[in-house]
Image 1: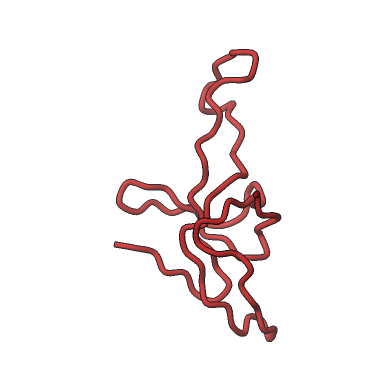
Image 2: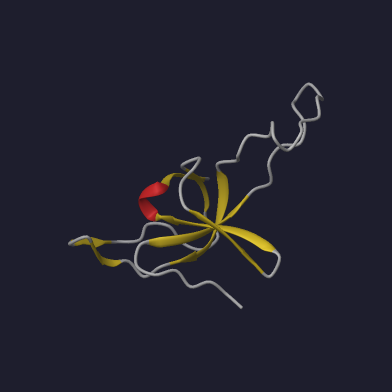
Length: 94
């Protein structure tokens, strides 16, 4: 099974949260900060969204930084993904 986003949506595979700090302190799951770095897994076709023509600027495989609490989290075949609007992606990482 696969996810195919619609319009200006992008499917992201979020990187795992840090389990310990740089100084070696192990963090509980409640203390772990939600990661913002992700890899683009699928990209919608763009098109007319809210009366505006949206061009997609990200592609599959791009490393991106997304808004911390944006999107909808889904679980498919044991993997966790986040579906966001392209506007919730803040930057690409090179």
